[in-house]
Length: 493
Ligand code: USQ
Image (tube, rainbow, N blue to C red; front, top):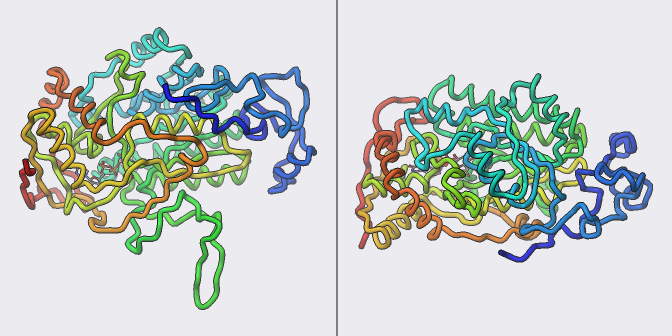
């Protein structure tokens, strides 16, 4: 087990979600001066977990001196921390629930099972068979130290969701309840509208529910690196906000850009929905002193975490069709059944990538180091930048030499509208520098993990059953003709 990282040991009650400010502080009146008032002892708070202390100066207690903040594998976490996961049935939501439960948290999850439904509507299925939520929760609660509770609920059903928020009193809230597919959102107007409605209104409603019932909770909202696009000028993709020394020069004058949101240039209507979510959360932090980390996440791949690996009943979903599969997972599955890997366009597109297990570690670390009241901050969550071509070549090398497969690559006409040859200068420093994140996995090992899992006969059969759904058919242009093959490449031995 990696040593416990004490990144959050020196944090004070000022950022603790267990501390109640309401009634004691008029944030609007004190404005940006709140922090200095706290620092100078003028501001007092109460602790919901330790009401016996009465009113106290929030700067006087640190996490490492508070018995409620206990050491864990990934920094300190509140004892039995109450964490709400919206979208707990998803590719990320489920492994996160397991990880938090393994660290002793009390996890409350909801899901409307829209992903299961949409994957079935496409005619595809998770390559790794997944259990019902009832079964998942039963096995998890037997095997892990914390507790997981689940309710089937749609985040958009505000009549149910608001009372649920009030009743569960979460200390941290993870917003994963979004439709995550760029191609699905571009397939037709109904699917675009579905994506926008689900994602934008879900997050909007959530901010109001937090305002009314959990204003001290920290919100971890899943955004995406695709919100930024890939500016052809090569301008760095900062972590959501311009750094303090960024300036704008225009007509001989110069202005500071420090602290302003960086430009967004989304690459599909799905990514548009994420940008709208960014603004909703940014505004809510400003209007109501909510606190949030917005996670600009790269493309996730992989199927393994220590908790998922405990029992097949705990599998998370693993999709590979053109809508619901991400590129590395698709390439490994294509190679496993002798289909060519489908590179869109030149294959020089650069994206940020991160394994499932590293992504989960990042989120746990964000849970453990909550933002301050009113703070909106952004992290770019990725470990590597790869070209699509490099991914195909890596899958080919491992597939051929270690699994005795016969990998093929096909370059296709690009169904998407995206830059294919572009600079990509991503800044991703905060997770490591401020939150103590250390990657525990890498591309080659994760590709091996995936091959091992999906070459099992039952999984391979589930890929075979959706062979026809691996080839892309959804063009951003809306045209229906089949994508042309530009080149077929047999990777070098
Ligand atoms: N690509 C191929 N061949 C394929 C599939 C994809 O060349 O068979 C290329 C795409 O053109 C793109 C890159 O691979 O340039 C990544 O595509 P993807 O389908 O793996 O990922 P994307 O559509 O960008 O979306 C995924 C998740 C989404 C998340 C996003 C992070 O589905 O939820 O937000 O990754 S990011 O890409 O950084 O915005």
